[in-house]
Image (tube, rainbow, N blue to C red):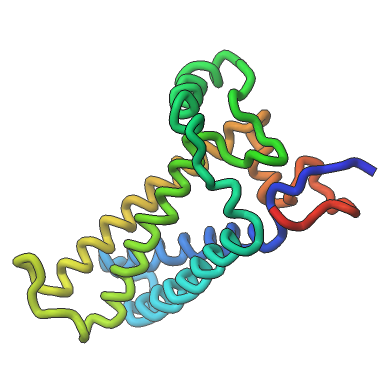
Length: 211
């Protein structure tokens, strides 16, 4: 039987693909509400958007729990060498080495799931933009509790603009994320890892299910 290192346990894969679906639903309904496309009833779009947003918040809290108590958080711990020369080495690889077929400077192994740029980027997104889009979304969900004016703008307008900016950021992030997911040893390697949890694509006996 082949051995495998389980980088992505079942709970993490389920969270990732569920998040993907939720983001697409939120993006589609958000665009519909923002631009007024007459695809479905506006009130239905608002309801779907709100429900998907609440579920996304619950999934975010679960993800934080998984990182703190289910072993996945160790992959996000920044080390000094990640900052220097890690970021420089990885940037050179992305800009040059990857096109010349050079080996990846930080390949996946049992102790490393992210290269330095990925680690810094994902950690920043988890701690900053993700909470920001949640907070602004909750503010709009409970808009009746907002102040009438904030920073020279109507209270709801400030939060709506901030929420929209975060939505644009995550739209760009998803495109970049999809591209970076093609930079493994093969174009599909990282996608298969997120689907099956290991490089073989099989569920192995005796392999830990914790990431």
